[in-house]
Image 1 (cartoon, helix red, strand yellow):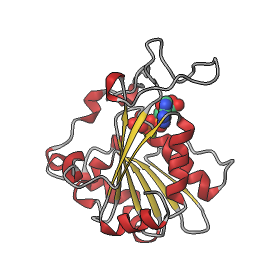
Image 2: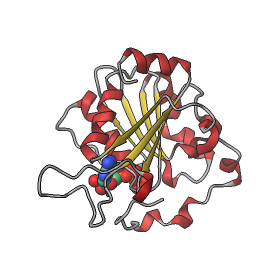
Image 3: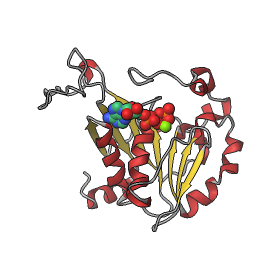
Image 4: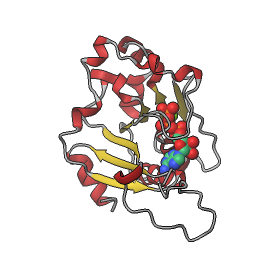
Length: 213
Ligand SMILES: Nc1ncnc2c1ncn2[C@@H]1O[C@H](COP(=O)(O)OP(=O)(O)OP(=O)(O)O)[C@@H](O)[C@H]1O
Ligand SMILES: [Mg+2]
């Protein structure tokens, strides 16, 4: 799904996104759908999404993998940017790895690996990106993680970002200020996102310890 008001750049046309048979046989968004959500949160602005990224960064350890699911413009890079800046420096540039596919950032805890697998056509290409090293002792953030297929480690934390429109969202509180920047003319919060977090028991414990749930 494309976020409201966002047009597709040339490399982001839906035709690019058809999974190969091999990918279709691999992990898909629904694979964890049966698992209970560890955390469900509504974020109202990009800053709130970035802040959730920073909160997760605070508990990240070498070897962790954060899978960021969601349609085009749902806020995956915004969340990753908050995460990376929390560990690598607040002033650091964190562009979308759309074209590079992977960008790395040095941090005290570990090297941060930010992947955007949108343009990865075949699972064989994955390993040329440094996945093995990233998953072994780096901290990895992966946009379009469905492309990982069977390469996705079972202990990953999965975050699903969903733009919320119309009646699907919680009641929108009128903004205190007159800027109205977060609401459309019909009162719909254009920047509202739902973020659903899923993962195994170890993640449940870590999120609890960190006070995130
Ligand atoms: N609550 C929100 N959280 C995150 N981004 C938001 C939010 N509300 C609006 N936005 C806007 O939505 C866009 C999200 O862009 P972003 O690059 O993070 O998307 P993405 O999910 O990484 O997309 P892509 O699949 O193309 O990489 C930004 O322009 C951001 O300002
Ligand atoms: Mg992105």
